[in-house]
Length: 184
Image 1 (spheres, rainbow, N blue to C red):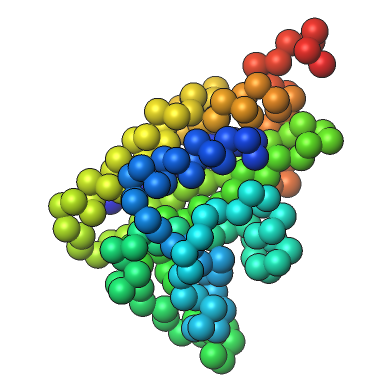
Image 2 (cartoon, rainbow, N blue to C red):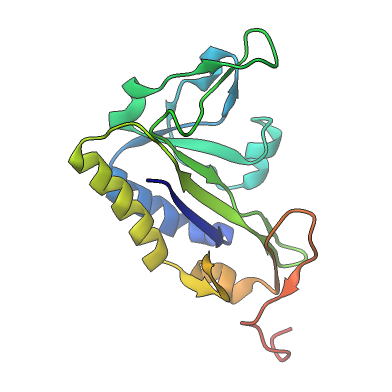
């Protein structure tokens, strides 16, 4: 069963996210690339970066990384793509990974852009592994508040510090319902 959590976060909210990941998954690894040469798709022990710009600049992707529970490392199946010879991809349907797209926060404009956690693995898991994934998404929801529509969540620092939110790339920011004119 797939799970998805769309959210807004400020860099200060990463401590909540990291704590939730550690609490539910125990130790985990990350792979900064969803697509590339096979050797670059190997997960390394680490955490999600503090700055989304690191994902976009140093790792040359769209701000998405894959979070790999340690019990899932041996289950990864990079598949060759048809686009480029020697290029492989970790498809989320075929691999027990949590896709993490960071919520970019523009500190000058105080605008938060939507991020996402996504799980779509269609293979079989042990009951304890399935329970970990369920708990991860439950705790992330509990650590955040509903943002206007039920499918969007907002973490505490983004709620307090953002003046506007961008739900989809290419759309105009929407003023925050949480800030009053006096705070601006």
